[in-house]
Image (cartoon, rainbow, N blue to C red; front, top):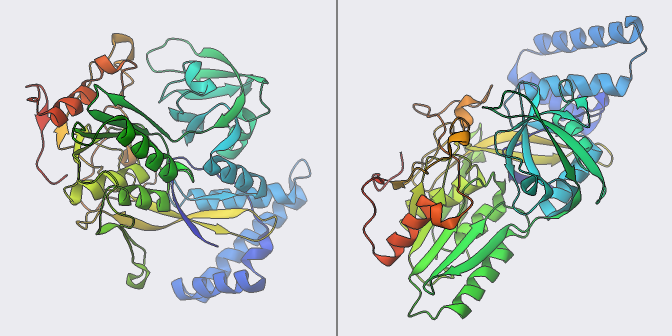
Length: 443
């Protein structure tokens, strides 16, 4: 079974060498290689790999593990493609399934790898990491005193996971701080609640979506149902859906979340290397908020699946976008299980396009109304996310690439200028002069 995922973070481990040369999978890969390049050239390169592999096995100063050598070779091959393709061994594959199911043991942070260190994309709300003060953009240099440099992302993540009530210590490098920070954290069973909501002032429903896992759409529908019970329809001014610092998740959840607000129409299309691989995903299920006004909040930490939802609702003129430019991850990773015990390959197989036919890869989505937050002095040098365009080996944009944008969200709603602008917009209050309006179509 194949499944499409849109994730900001990535990691890599190995698979058996025989998959490259024997069996149905091997025959398929060889056939693809023959079509893509001259047979002689392909076999020459495979022979070179085989010669290096045998020389290392025979002459390295210490006897190496064949499995570790192959994993390292696969890692090198896949990491050379783009920042988001990755190989997962059986253990890593099981852990990813746990994560997307919404329950796992650990700290509660979304991470990626940058310059050999683990970088925090975002702490998950109400988890040990968030409570301990871990911030988006932090670099994890050590885990329990062991340097992260030299570990794969999978290995580093495995060290951070563990049984509930056990402790770990992270050594953090934070921009603007002269010395690393040691932060002790007690692990918990992380039950990711991807949707939270409350009512505001008796006339607005606020819904925050923190990730796109298997529970997201059900959580969203329950939130809408409960808000509609708390606020009579004649008093309901509209909804705010907050996608800020949401790093993404499952493609099918992005489609179904968009469908919750759209009666019909295309949500997203994906286009691979060959024209016949184009797929179109359309809205299903109807507009559950019955045409009520909708504001979507985005920022520099809104990526992939978040951008699909924002782009679809915007292109259909179903929502007004407020905040700052999104991250710009416009690629789809297809999860390809490789058989029992062999894990899975997450391979970038397509770019995705909004209903208007626009790719946001390395460009992001600009809001209709740009609102920048007032950032505390001690955080001013670390509140901008560089975005997809800054990632080494990223797929190039269709046009001019755009850098990232501000990702800071004030902890108190009263200080959140973007959220207050959304409330004012729904209530018909004039937006403040320091808020810059954009064109109707994102650029």
